[in-house]
Picture 1 (spheres, rainbow, N blue to C red):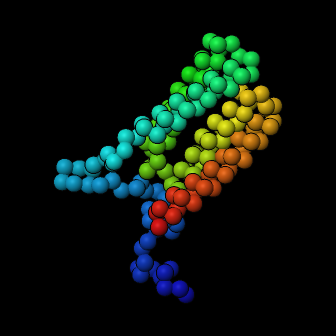
Picture 2 (spheres, helix red, strand yellow):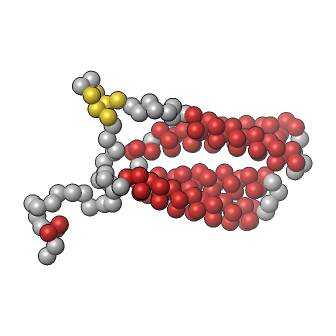
Picture 3 (tube, helix red, strand yellow):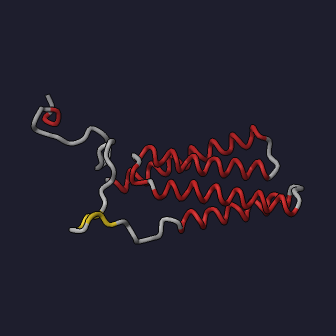
Length: 151
């Protein structure tokens, strides 16, 4: 029998990575309590991504027959939704397992790419396929990056 499954000899968690599946990543703790990570604001990357998505949506909508007002409204709605979801993912990333983080980041990119393709004039089936494949690619890449940084 391997030594790592003997009772009392090894009490590590069963899942991959340094954090047990039912626990959160540890925060830096001082005498006054946990300290949040302030190396980069949590809202910076989602806001940049949302603005880029919104402006590209406006560009594509104007090139494909949308009126001026509806193109800007569509871009604004896309930017607000993407920024909100991105901020929630970045803020809660330490509470998720590696697999859940990779799936959520992949889903966000896949939905965004599929949406942009549909605004560009693609059929809904082709947009779903492109979004699905880019989401799977982003999920796999995210999993690799997150897994490597944990080990």
